[in-house]
Length: 183
Image 1 (cartoon, one colour):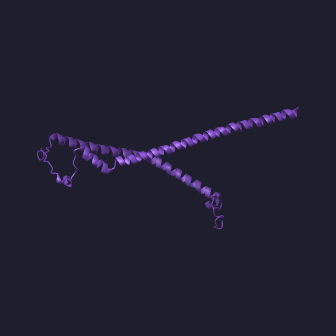
Image 2 (cartoon, rainbow, N blue to C red):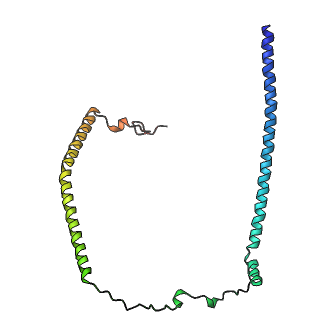
Image 3 (cartoon, rainbow, N blue to C red):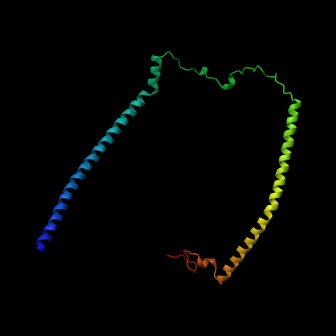
């Protein structure tokens, strides 16, 4: 009985895999047809683009446009004598030229003096602030120097722990100790 159940189970699995392969085969064929349809549409679009570019080149040809301008409008061609440079155009004199005279009033002089005094006071304030900052920064510089000394002392301690070895002994290199490169 066990054999019949096991054989029936394997037969069912074989039938199931056969049916799924059959369905998969037809799905793949449908996708291939769809892919071929897309390729045909792409080729058709490329042909249409090529035709439109040819039409565009024909419609924008200079000889054709020149004929259309002659027949459709009453415009005339530009002659070389009509072209001039900017230096050939005479400049129109200004109406107010030479009439304006700058007169400095007492108020203008007072305003200039006020601005000069203001800039001098600003400079003095800046100098006093910078002096105050340098006095405050001095202790910070001293603490920085002390920390640099402690770092260099730690570095000396580390070097003494190496006991005659150099830093190159601890760094990976593609050269062996005799100076030859590893194969």
